[in-house]
Image (cartoon, rainbow, N blue to C red; front, side, top):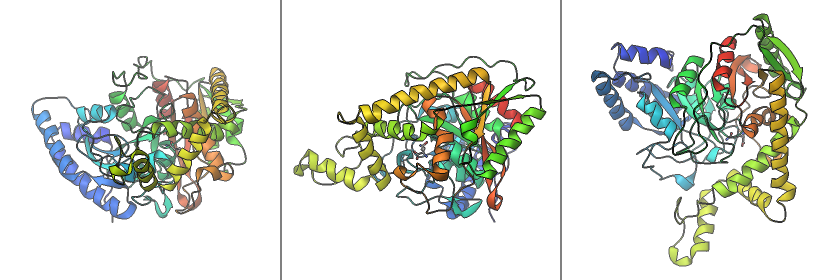
Length: 475
Ligand code: GLN
């Protein structure tokens, strides 16, 4: 029987600061639970046991020296596309199997500075490309709530580790839903902030204009605390900024909650729609006003996302050519092109290759206007429609996914995702990335097999704090 980590990060840090247990004890217990979680779910690519124990001792020494540490001794799980100094960071790819970064991603560094201890690097779809954490040379991740199902992707390891009780808090990344979807499938809170609200320094890029670091936890308060500690301008990422200061607590009385028709269509499963209805009813009962509205271009979001993301990926991943970056296959004497071909051919997995080929086509001179250029135009249109919707409403309420976690072995390649539940799930999640908006997935009751469903709140850019304030009324 797995011993779950039931205590929240907020409570655990308070206990460590009060001397009820040491950071070393907290981390030793988390590592034992992480080993059990690993056996059941394969959530981790790397368990950083020795590094975590040494880091915990440093936290205890800092506490003894009188430092105030808001995350004192809190075990943290980090998606394996966020760089961790001295701990290998693979991005879920053979291409980076031996990469040991000499520096921490800014978000990791800020949480570690606050007393958190990284216990391991969580599995992901290779470079973040997937929805079920099955596209990985390190093996699929199973959902701890039902091992025949996926944990969601691409931050599946982060979600599985928290849901299995290894740690209260995890970092993921979200390019088109990869934090919110696994959070929904595992019954957690998953937050993708506004573009630029968390630094991407040290994040191994999938598609730079869509990528955001996100936070997963069982408790909303843990997500808020980690976000407050990690947000703020970073000289290493020019897209970052300081958010406006927090206003007074968000009043629910008179709050306008927008329900976009296209996101509540029949293609979403009945259970997912019922979850949104329950959330809407609860907000209305607390005094909010429901506003029906429309995002006419929303059905174009999945196509727009896949063209934009794969186009950027073909550029972002071009550096992995076996010469300066990434693993090398073949002898140098064979020549540069032969080494590139051999390295990229052998070390990228099939989904990554499909996306890079398509993305290269989308950016090619012959097809640019028809594909990438058009995706940019649709993206601007979608952003405009969302902006108009967020003038009529303070937040939007929508499903996170079309239903509960799907069975292992069922995920289709990206080019087959333009119908059925996969299409609807991509539509619900990709909108926020395309427009750079903050969005949070919250537990929304259960569906088939008693498995969790997610509901999603989305708000205006840089309105992250207010959005989380509204979320408090739904947990
Ligand atoms: N599921 C989406 C995809 O397959 C989103 C992935 C992500 O956010 N990294 O690309």
